[in-house]
Image 1 (cartoon, helix red, strand yellow):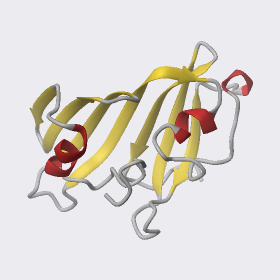
Image 2 (cartoon, rainbow, N blue to C red):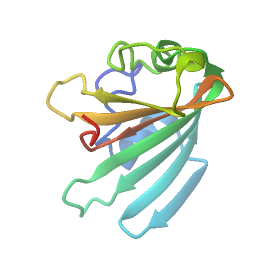
Image 3 (cartoon, rainbow, N blue to C red):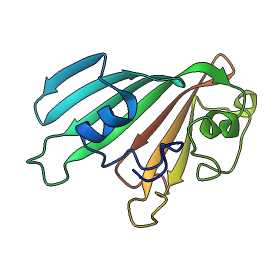
Length: 139
């Protein structure tokens, strides 16, 4: 992880790297192919799925942030965790006709990814941001 203010490089991060950044997880549950971790962060509740070290692609496979304070625009939501302007173009939650906004997200090194970013809209606000270690299937 290169920039501590940006979460763009969380995909691929090891469990130890995540703990160094966010502290010990509130929850750690073993899963068939790795672990699920939940961290309390200033931006909200972060849920992470990590593949085991023996996996072909170890480290963070996906993560979802439940925003502590829902946002009116995608830019406002993504800026809080350094994903702006990588998550562009902007859209207001009140203008979204589907409950999910999708974007292609490329890591800051330009080599990892592209990854899939989804932003959930509930009650006219962006409430969740998720990133997956796979290219989007909607492009």
